[in-house]
Amino acid sequence: MEFGKGHGTENDFVLLPDLDVAIDLRPERVAALCDRRRGLGADGVLRIAKAGALQTAGVLDSLPDGIGSDDWFMDYRNADGSIAEMCGNGVRVFAHYLRAHGLEERDAFVVGSRAGARPTTVHSFDRHSGDVTVGMGPVRDMGSSTATLGGRVFDGIGIDVGNPHLACVDANLDADGLAALDLTAAPGFDPGFFPHGVNVEIVTPLRDGGVDMRVHERGVGETRSCGTGTVAAAAAALRSDGHSDGVVVVRIPGGEVEVRIDDGVAALRGPSVLVAEGTIDDTWWGSLG
Ligand SMILES: N[C@@H](CCC[C@H](N)C(=O)O)C(=O)O
Image (cartoon, rainbow, N blue to C red; front, top):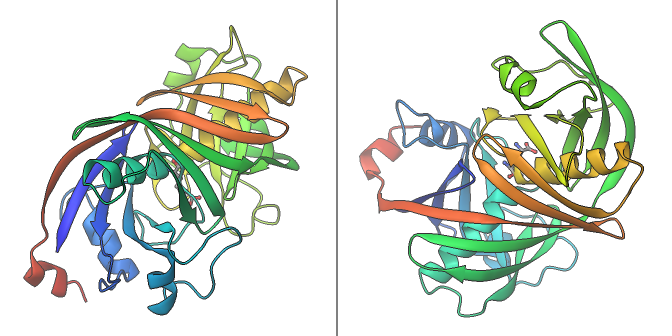
């Protein structure tokens, strides 16, 4: 079984090219693959296939709106084996892998996700690095909620970017204060508000067009970046400043990305890096149950 390894601002993924949809991605296998000691180690897995092949194989019950059977589809799994609707950094790495491996000849094409079609543009790439913009779709305000972290309560806004986020902009927080927070334990949240769990972003206020952000991801833990999270953070920071649209540079521990929100629809631009490829041992894979 062939694999690739890549990251977008250090949110890292195992890529599994699986055009015949022959790989059984049961949760315990995904979790083992993503484990940094007993597996390859990653924040998530990106199965590479066409939407129609995934539907024929029964991985997708139906095709989300706007996705045709011949479109690429990013079948995303979190490190704990759970399925999530969308992964912004994942789409950049997915699109870069397709271009770098000659699977796709166009610079602009659709990547399907469970949250819908994501129009993607690969501005430049080589075998190692890429620069990619992803149309992230509508940013939906879900209302106010709170996160608790180390006994502190952070006011936030629930934001749906295809997957659920709680973006907490703290007016009194600067980059040093953010870096000092302990995000090893999952922040507390209201399960009535977020019945399917939530990704929590802690964000500094908008200053000179930029914010700093850290994230605790549903199904993963703290990661060094989260693309959908950067969109939620940008939307929340703009709103705290009295705006709904704008361009925000979001600095995360793994680098920085640019988020553009126009009429409530977001685009995410940032880097992708492909670091390795190889073969997963069939005996080991088969032993995982
Ligand atoms: N890292 C991703 C988001 C992955 C999914 C998330 N953990 C969830 O469960 O919703 C990104 O770059 O957007």
